[in-house]
Length: 449
Ligand code: ADP
Image (cartoon, rainbow, N blue to C red; front, side, top):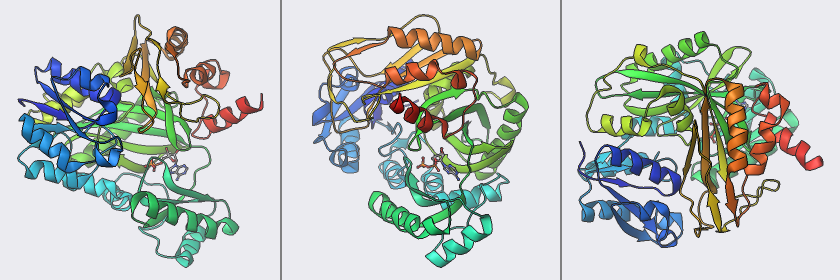
């Protein structure tokens, strides 16, 4: 097992990883920007190192500073969390080149899945179904027209290096194509420094369903079932459930079997998530994330597994020690992402949190780095808390979430708690009757009222 783990992240996920390390008896090193000197992940760490000024580019993305912090503190492994450097293959390679362990997949697999075109090619060769679309990169507008004519409008132009919902544009007809093409390529170039794009059929009413997998270095792969992440705004997830209200156990087992067989063939290691769109009983692969997901807790609640602990054990060379038959699913879990944003305009609301009271009780979990007196800095992602509930059935989970949201007090900054309360009270949500477009329409309806 590792002697000391450096956590190259901040906020709730840095705390989440610290907690897993502490239970495994491993001391941790926190890194932080000057803006985060008072952050909870720094206050609770065994050791901490300041790695740069507020801008993420100069601190949490500063590879040299992070590697130096590991060297100075004698850490022998680095956990990247999610976001920041977690899907940076060069970083994973440099960590290993410095004789440290990267707690995650191999850099080759990160690179393969980081480019969505190579990811789709790899998945197709493993028998995983795809969204109909271009055969790889689309080089120019003429080719884009030809692909769109073949798969029929509406189509979606997507950045090969895309992430966070950026570099994605819909063309509803040939009239929109040129504009969508230009905007998607420009956005891809500015956001990712790579203007390669591909085209997919734009599905009109899919759900976003993803499978959590875990693989060790000995060829054992298991899945921990699906999460439904259809509730999104601007292609960004806001609320997640495990399991999906739309899936039968047989559908989960079938998809899980395809996915685990594919990843075993690939020789994949550590945690990963395969994302699918699900419409008319069909699953279509869209991308794979080679890291821990923000929404991993809902899976932990229904499977009774600590996914971060599993990541650390596997990276340390341990075998899974169980098979698919040992993975069981119990009850239903929901996660609400609470962000420091105005619940109506979605404008960021950094600032001083004067009162913080987290809900509790049976089946309630809060993953957050907030505390009373903390000033939410304006420099980073606006996620400030994840409220997760677990109950025997979905209606009971919704009742529990309503109760927990009502107890949750964050004073001083506006948060999205009121929006989650409105979602919980909505009959369509309660019926589980939603697609990836539902939330945007719901928010529009609220704005009109
Ligand atoms: P990113 O890496 O930017 O998150 P994804 O490929 O994972 O991009 O897609 C993000 C979201 O965009 C999906 O969850 C879904 O809501 C929407 N989306 C992606 N591809 C399609 C498609 N072909 N049709 C309709 N919606 C899509």
